[in-house]
Length: 435
Image 1: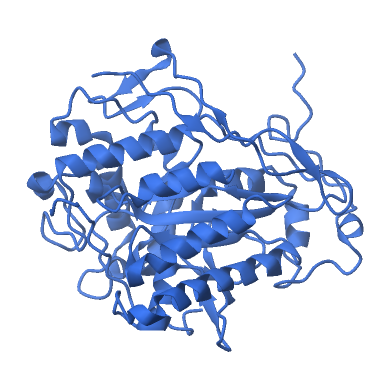
Image 2 (image 1 turned 120 degrees about the vertical axis):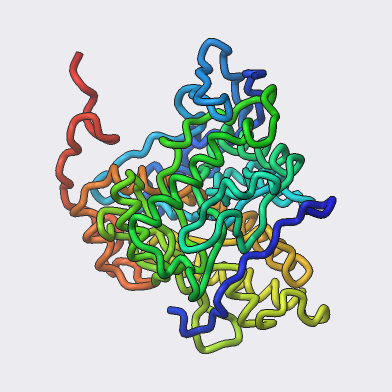
């Protein structure tokens, strides 16, 4: 790779409006998502912007290395809020999820930058790591992609320095309460063996390889004295987004059998989520596209394709306008939910400098604009899934009756005034267990 180690841009389909050793783990400054509260429109207590506080160092005795020491069990993840059931008549919080496909740290240093952005704005995010970013190029033949020859990848591999930088960001991100998901490995799209043609068993193999590369980076790089990643990836990995949003049908079947809890590989309207084949469907959504009569998917790549086509560095004179267009579209979608049905807003991005980095600027401005508002929670997919699992199913069914942007006519207090079924013992929101 070049000295900047910039990752190869993933190949995607043109999207249009019709796409409906040293075992010490460093202490880091992190966001605490449990803390102060504000009042919602009904006068009830609701989580508001939280104040950052430093994380405590992980005690040495709490670290248990796994395998070759690339990963380790260090206890429960810090800074995860305990989800609570909505009380009768309580207005739901407005969830916003910022997620990153193929997350890795290269010469652009966008991973480290957006960690800082998240901490400054009381947010946590989901980083969908590409497994091949943990595999050095000289070990590329260890990857055996389904329906392709060994060592093949449409986004290349990494080098040792790039893996070291990515491991550092993954370690700190997790300790700050962020989620590490997967974007799988070789990013094969379209025909000729693309992910859309893979069987359930081939998807299982791809998932297992993604896990293996994360769990063996010390061996493949020779960095045996480096600090481990502070999590068990077999337990950490509970969700994903497929390359180009293809192959979802068989992937979901494989993921369900492998213990995943959610998928973010589809296209939804701004409605409350439901489960699809046993997994929460937390797909990206369609939001207004300023200046157009059609709506746009909440992903930087799709805005780019509908602005400059497949040319990732289009007319420089339009870069600022294009970034503003994405920012304003996302903010319109946010307001539509925040003032309407409160459906979670799901946003997807890449660590890329397409069209002069205008989309990175747009995302940062959206984070700053929404994550500090009252009753807004900028969270990872894991945290959203935890909250959904804690709710009374009848409450979620009622929330799903609200259309896009539709607030209850009678107000939230009346709309959700019923008495939800009690939570089973041991479920968040349940009465404490008797000793």
